[in-house]
Image 1 (cartoon, rainbow, N blue to C red):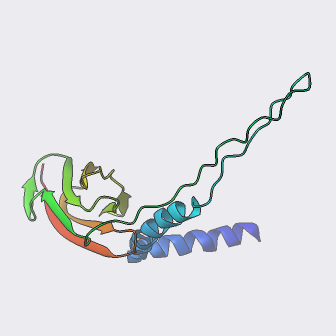
Image 2: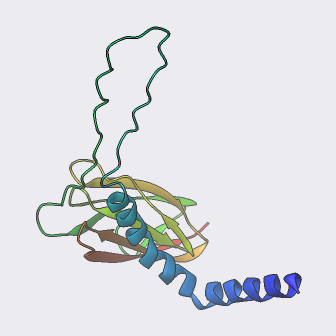
Length: 161
């Protein structure tokens, strides 16, 4: 019975992968997970750990409380992909994707059923190198802000050997 359940679950995943639904699901979930991590950190407190003392002494002062508060982004969400140019033909097996968005945004790069998450610096710049398949490669870059807004750019790259 367990093997049959595992077989059905595996077939379900294969069906999602073949239909491209897994990619869409992952792209939709990643920004939500990041926001959940940020909001989940609100109210986290550093636990005080008293140290044992061999003799009576004055009470130790309480440890400082650590509270993480997310910072809303300023300005309207935008996404600019500066590299590579759309419809480029390349002869290397990987390509660097660079661009800019607002500070605090989360950027995801989707390519050939894989998702890559580049770091976004304090000025909103991001860069990541991704592998290409031989032939046409459709790259989707998505920026998501603190409020759940999204901007996307699609780029087509052709890799020839």
